[in-house]
Image 1 (cartoon, rainbow, N blue to C red):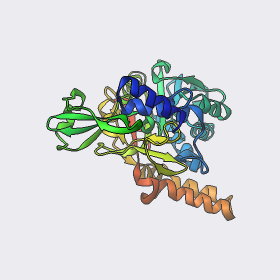
Image 2 (image 1 turned 30 degrees about the vertical axis):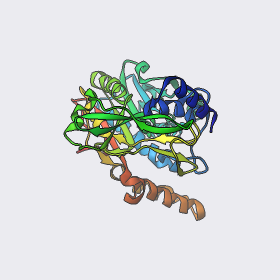
Image 3 (image 1 turned 90 degrees about the vertical axis):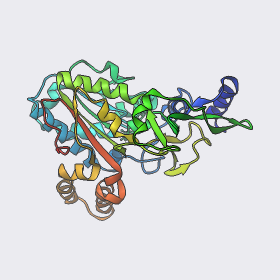
Image 4 (image 1 turned 120 degrees about the horizontal axis):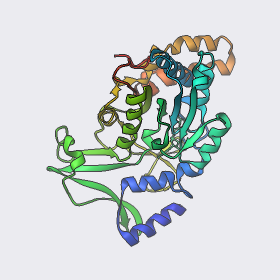
Length: 352
Ligand code: SAH
């Protein structure tokens, strides 16, 4: 058992079972033993890789979409360019490079990162030294907000509930023979799942991301009031149904309870929950990553970059293009949703 596992076992023995969200929060962000708090997990030799680590084209195209949205909204100045959970800072570095030539964009912006991991903040500072860091979205400046979040919401702790009649039993982490084990709480009606009584049946499992509503409400309120756009990319779908929680280590699935703090834990994102919390701003239609990137011209960009490459570099560039866009790879699994002011149009790539 890991050091965090021993701490959790002692805590549960003392105070009783904890919710899955509490378990995830400690596994990911415990200050001494949390997965993100203590390491840089990215890259092809790491535990998992993400779209900006696969190809520079991902960040470049998102940067151009945001810059066009800024122009379409009349070039509001000054504005915040923010990223939630920036990982190594690669995506923002690509956004900044691609938007350098957009007249006035860099002069009007200040870059803000929302990141809780000290290790990843250091990695981000190497690539984007001029950023300002925040623990939560609450402290982002009160001004126009252009924002990106790639694979951020999937890292937020979720609760899981199993339906029983008109009530729910919550998945808990407890102990069996001094080892961590899953159990279910007694059934109780849960007000925040009232709307799920319409689209579920007895025995169905639903997930609820506890931090999501407040985060989306906070960024949407700024966008509605001062203008801007958020582009949210993640794996998931319109509505979550079923158990999507996964543990990942060295690009392999691992048992959720075996190595607390030693593996990434992620769950699919419920985009309907993002849409429900977007008011008074508007949300775009949910678009697959493949379609979004194609609409932004990834194939032309890939061809132009290919001109300078040969051999293995060319092969891996072609593979990266395919990996980001192909329906059998990230193209369909990952979805994109935009949030934008009621008097503006959706950002390029997310039009109806
Ligand atoms: N966007 C990056 C990294 C995704 S991994 C990429 O595409 O490569 C998730 C990121 O969110 C990490 O940087 C992690 O440290 C951060 N993170 C996770 N939970 C967080 C929270 N509650 N608040 C702020 N950042 C968080």
